[in-house]
Length: 150
Image (cartoon, rainbow, N blue to C red; front, top):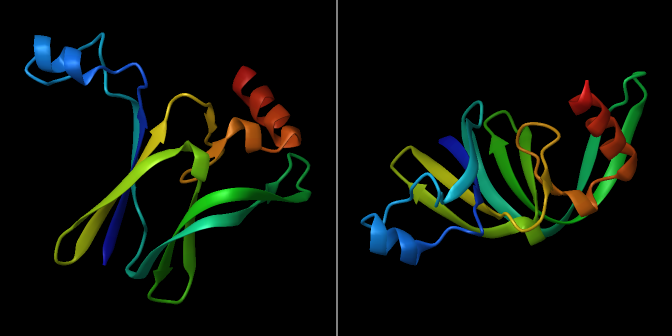
């Protein structure tokens, strides 16, 4: 099965009432519904799709000097896609950042939408990983901030 993940950061200042009154229910340049949107396809054929709530995610990677790191990030919603070969692709989201989710299915594929709240900053250190800035490891936050400044 083909799976597409769509992540949208909901604009907390969006006014549906204003859109209904002045623009036939549609957003405008000064009243936008989503601040940004990411969409990506899970590579390969997904055999099983599930959402695990209140999970701990292990954020793994390499420091610039090639030393490995591993941090536990609690209170996550993890989207798990089990592939035909048995491998698992995980897409973690801080549970407190998620406003809602929904799934749009067709016969051989589906779209999974994740709507994030814009009232708290979310860090996106790599494709498919969305962690509240408050929960992101401070040690890594300094590295991410330094990379963005260069």
